[in-house]
Image (cartoon, rainbow, N blue to C red; front, side):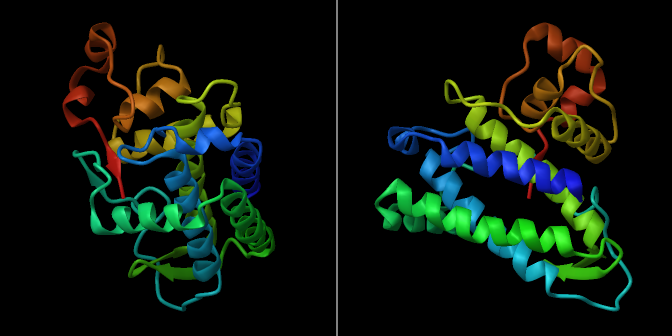
Length: 218
């Protein structure tokens, strides 16, 4: 849960320091500008708040790994929900409004996570899992979206090293195989999720795993 808080705080700090002109540039999320990604983070923060106050006595159905649905086709940004995010982001008009909303809702989500009992079961997306597993799953979410900014924009600091390492472990568990030791954590995450194409030598190192990539998480 501390890792959730550190990963989330680092991502919000990066967004808070972005110059206005960066909001109109492409992010690492296909079809989304930076402003669209930041709007998505606002929605994510709302989801965290809702989930943390939706306890259940039901038995867990997923954990931090099986929480994720996987596909092989990266979104193009024209899915109805993705398109809605784009329209919402445009409605903010000024980057400062987006920054303010993310800071406001995001700070609340961070505080709620810090107060949560990791053993309490919560429900979201018609699934049941412990709060600890839910917040662990979001370490991967925050880290990937942090990379969507730092891998595309100059002078943007990357995610915390411990968040990268934990996210690599989670992605490997989702894939059912470890990424080659020669891959950095960043390479494993970007290549594993289709955000970066592997080189010929990296494809060879991936071996049988290459045929299962990319892992598009949803």
